[in-house]
Length: 517
View 1 (tube, rainbow, N blue to C red):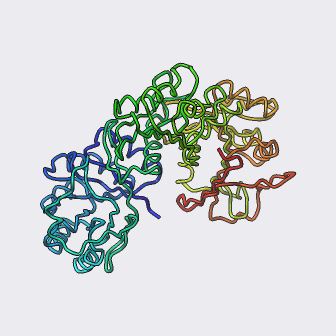
View 2: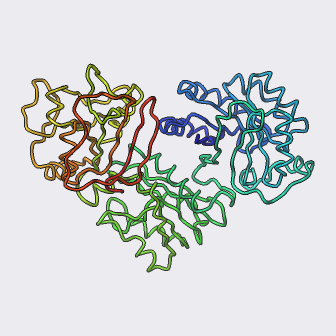
View 3: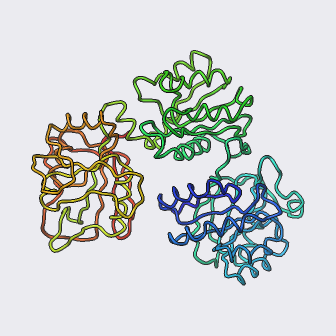
């Protein structure tokens, strides 16, 4: 499955950070909404913004599908092609002569998609798609538009055969079409803090997804606090948004409620974590929620902080309806912080590269995993507070454990567990005490996450002590035949939860949780 996030031309102030997050997540197909703030004429900034982002996306091997919600879309094709667009998606309801529109796109060497509204007959749209030889079809389950504005009423009146039984939004490949790389379309357009979204897109799932997206904007600046996002919805419209930006500054829900103003009264507040109930560097967020007159609060996760939790109890006592959505995505978003604040130790991740026969080293091979997997490891190092190996690995390889090929504001602390001495000139930090004591000391120093990179002896020690939280195995398409194996001797089997498999270059990345956040 290929996820195709939607990015919006008029939200150019945030596109840079959005693209960075999406590209790092592996997204390569982008649905680009062309518009100046309303999906109608005039279209002026769309091609300009497209030109500014196309090189970044193409350098990463990406594809840009430009969605034109306008009549006579063909007059914009040349500008889109010149700016770096790879394909265009036009609307069935807006094209009087679809074959001519498709031919105009082919002249510019653009692929073509066809979108149709939920009220339009799928049979009419399918017939047009087949006859015109479009490459892909987008079936929309919500009414296109912006800020309540109806979309092209004059065009809709000209099309017969509409029906209201369309469910879900999916894309299918039109018969005879070319490579249908764009296999999904999700409306994830970023909106400003006071933007308003039509009711069709503000269900609990969509609102929490938006809050999670907002929370990520604080990644790297909130430490040691968690990242949190919030969305205020009133009468089916988003009336306020916010995210926690820095320690000591207002929390996400306070910012969102301030953006909503008087419209927060009687509204529903969606946020990624339960509002805090204590006075730290800022007042309790529960006070702001109650003062704003919010009727209902939906949180993706509860607050595990012993000092701050209990916000739902305070709100419930004040007559506010509360819902714990218990979202795994919301818990994973702050998985390291949650364990650190609740148990006083870092969240420990074990990363190993293995052959198909379970070897952690192969004869005459410097690397087991491929180049893309090794780059992913540097990205992992950039995301954690500390990286560690065992003394066996230190003596064998004298590793640096630094982040390379990835830009980072700071290097993680680099540790070696075991008995010294360290090799002369080593810049690693030796930790020779019992594991539980060393982890507690690291947590007291503010280390929330720890990445273990080697080798099998260190891994077995953490597994036997039940101090491992997450396992990431890069399995290479190689049978070594000999060499050390990852086969720790355990008293009882260790069962993994939430197991996922991901292709990384030629390797397979298996990820699972020993302790789910």
